[in-house]
Length: 130
Image (tube, rainbow, N blue to C red; front, side, top):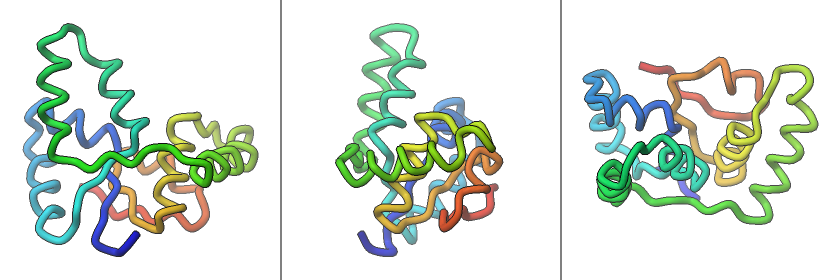
């Protein structure tokens, strides 16, 4: 991919859904420079958070604004590599490993509020938040 894409983590999207002004303003600023994309894992995490069909329908509408990056062989292999390297030492979770692998494989930055979940991963580009 090119430098004009930005991978958005679940926590930012959850904050947008909660009408958090910091998250909304940050995404608006980033969309002036980048095409916002999400991992299919992020989509799944958000689906799990829905409490009813109305919320699910609203989520589907909201996600129309994002390109969704599906997990492929390269992302899977990188996620496995990351888990082997960081699971025991840093507690890296499966979903976070896939999201980080997506960022690394596509060579794009990952915008996340939870910097601590990713900061130890070598080569991962994490813009400061907020």
